[in-house]
Image 1: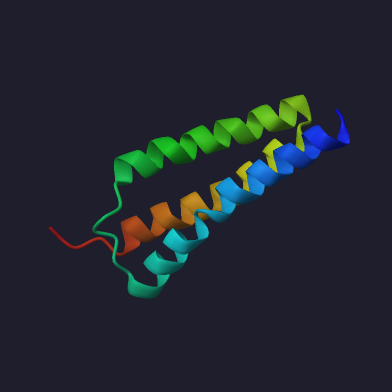
Image 2 (image 1 turned 90 degrees about the vertical axis):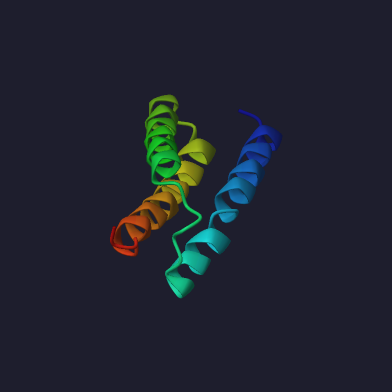
Length: 88
């Protein structure tokens, strides 16, 4: 890979990964999970885990780095959704 393609990959990885921080922080701070879909986050988290595996197989480190962090954030949001849900 060229340096510019790695830079492109890392830039995309940073932006998409950083986009989850406000949601994770807001959920942690307010414990308000009413607007979070458990189904969507479950499917999304599985997809991110698969992207992480794909990145490892290809040895594509921008993909690995982005998806490792995104997986941690998505799992945190999903766990908060479970922990802070309102009893039915």
